[in-house]
Length: 258
Image (tube, rainbow, N blue to C red; front, top):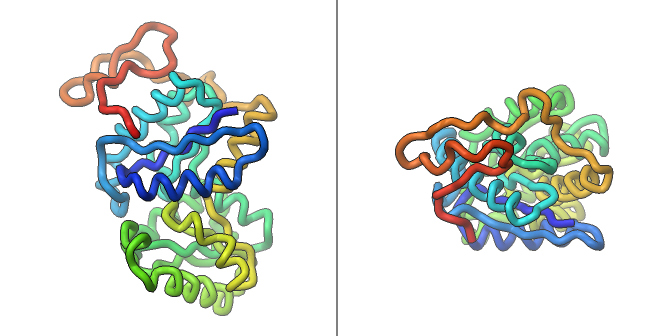
């Protein structure tokens, strides 16, 4: 089995971290390839960033399909482009916010999300509602550390741990969901430090995709998630447009990922 994990931003060092976490979660016989687009934002911290990350993400989904991937993970907590990726892919596509939040509901009655910047907390609440877990989500907290600073700020780990501990103490939650793929390597350490399960959405999404593939299940293609109808696209997106009848991935002229 081959699972492609797509970091929708263009920062290679974060892709490497995500890839290590994804491979650690995968079971025997599962190969994981972690990639990022060559075009788009270096980090995703706004609606604007998210919108401009989607074309590069979709290019990687299409490339993964052409390369034989059995399923895909969208490794950004905003789950950008998830619906469009499900239209393109033959196998299952899972976002890390959905996987992380759903996994947390199996572990207790309630959970909290600890993420990077306060400006992204509204999106997390929206996703909790979309995925039907709004009642179980007690809080969404931000540590006010920029995504790329997770790699460079020496105090990042301690600040994230302190916020997780405060969520447990003040909200009484049974689990924590980490709200950024750049935190993927912290889950095991934080679980020990704060005394409740800490869920990394990257690992949860990999295991979810792996299970769906083993069950022979994929996204239904009768209606909304059928392949998008061929049509011309103009300008820089021209390569995302018309394609031969029956072809799953679009013919892309967008730059390839790593």
